[in-house]
Amino acid sequence: MNIAYLLLGSNEGDRAAALASARAAIALATGNILAASAVYETASWGKTDLPPHLNQALKIATALSAQDLLHCLQQIENSLGRVRQEKWGLRVIDIDIIFYNEDIIDSIALKIPHPYFAQRRFVLTPLAEIAPDFSDPLSKQTVGQILAQCADPLPVQRLD
Figure 1 (cartoon, rainbow, N blue to C red):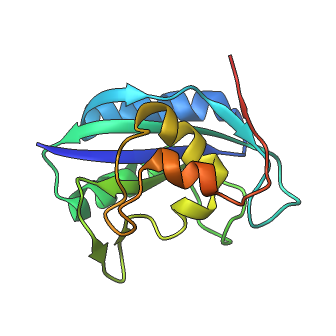
Figure 2 (cartoon, rainbow, N blue to C red; figure 1 turned 90 degrees about the vertical axis):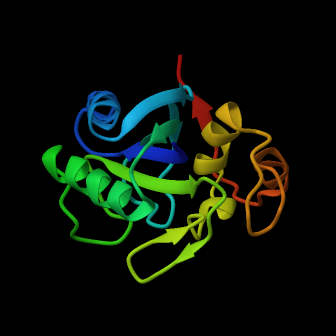
């Protein structure tokens, strides 16, 4: 069984419902959700004139390969109404693979660890909640250590 860490995000429509629908679809199609962070609200990163995102990190167990997991997650995004029009634009749902086991994958279609995770507080904060001691296979630092060094100034607010 493979362990993957995912980040869910939404900044369009009913954001909380989109995260809930994504969690349900992920559990049904990819394997078991072993842990889920709280939901966090963050300002838009990369394109600052957009509505805030809701984000949540998941730890899943899956029998799927990394490439098959990516394909499955893209199908889930599409089924929930994701339209890819502009980089960092509005999105009903976005599901990123942050880590897959301790693998390093560098292909055109898939890069693991996610290439920008260490620069984004909105990824690191929920990820650190469920996996503070997981080590990035590239830097060999834990998620908690990377979060402590993260220079991203955008606030990340936990929702109750």
